[in-house]
Image 1 (cartoon, rainbow, N blue to C red):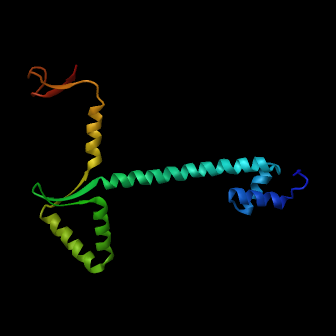
Image 2 (image 1 turned 90 degrees about the vertical axis):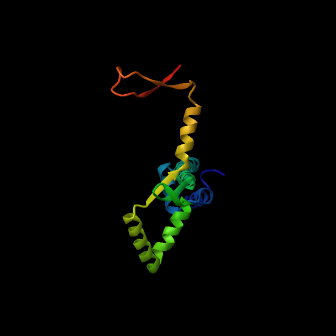
Image 3 (image 1 turned 30 degrees about the horizontal axis):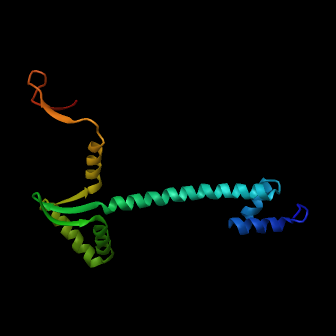
Length: 164
């Protein structure tokens, strides 16, 4: 169709149908491009891709954190003995459930205070850190050997790692 047949409203309707934007946004895009429908479509598409990139970045970050959380363990220890070990998501769900019920909340606070007084420890153990350390040494191309250096070079016998 020729440019003469297109009315302003028809152009706005085309933008709304194709890009899923509001009337106001479609009208603004047309005005910014002097009524050129193709340029307005290109501009709206570019903005849409930028928004998708930002939302994809956020969603990828959330997924990464969830994977990291799933590799985390909560350990309750007393005198180097592990009394209880559970995954972090389960621990968070349990803590949330206890916190939402007033009677359980009081019991939880009393239990936490008692555990602190009796020197219990809550350890957060990330399995991801351990695997990263192993991967880091797997990529190292040299053999690492431990050498004990004589006393005269250092104040104490210290282990020094050298590579060949």
